[in-house]
Length: 158
Image (cartoon, rainbow, N blue to C red; front, top):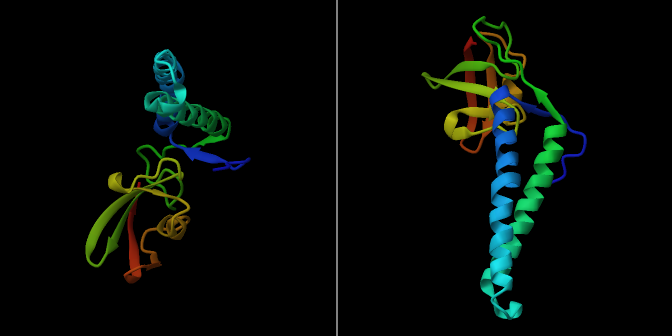
């Protein structure tokens, strides 16, 4: 995946998590895999050595991820957390309570690298995220979903 010069929006926590992953890959994981590779190389015939092939592939993956993280970290724009005051409009970092089919759901709007549907963190580039940006309490958002059109009403913005 090429990120080019695209801005990468992260919360301070998201930035911290990426930095930790980068540090772990460089200071721990890469060394472990290089050691495995070296041990496998000492076993002899490399053409039939599954451990050598697996370690080599894992090293290539780790090196690729390190390179990707380094590019990402150069393009990070920190999302200012709204803190304890309520914002009038939905933006990156907003925690938004919406009503859908009579049920309330709370989502946090984050950059695409932090999106995690399980934790109700949605990307500002997702259909719902795009629909929510700039909305105020009381606004309705119509989103085309696989199950048909869904209507979300903004109830609260934090």
